[in-house]
Image (tube, rainbow, N blue to C red; front, side):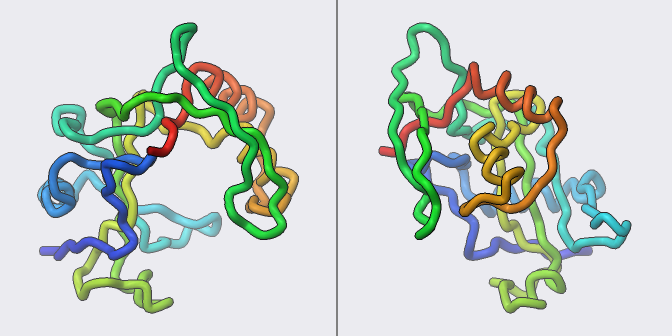
Length: 187
């Protein structure tokens, strides 16, 4: 039987703009551990295991999983600023956020890393077989795409981005999604 822990890097701050769980992270880890047969191991481009496992939360277990991505419409209170994400050489770009509260998520994925994967860089926080490293709560059944701005930073390999190639469809899906959604503003 596997053991499960919580990595020190996991954030569960209800005041942040990111996903949070209204219960304890231990409860989330317990839920995933009891349903581990449904976790999916991730593989690299060569087909080798990465030591990263994704657990998709069952729809009937979504209570208390909150998302900071909200739908927007004609009556939404939106604010646009120009800012960088803190890296020294990154050019400041516009960012639009919703003045809103987090909402109950529709889907969520919990990311677990194996002890061996974390221990390679001394990033493990426990001696457990797997540690919860992140969780993403979504406002839809599908994962939210990166914003078009983040995709452009990545595609063009600009400061603050990580070189990635995207298809025209991926760009179009991102534009369509973020045209009707926004991240909430920080408090």
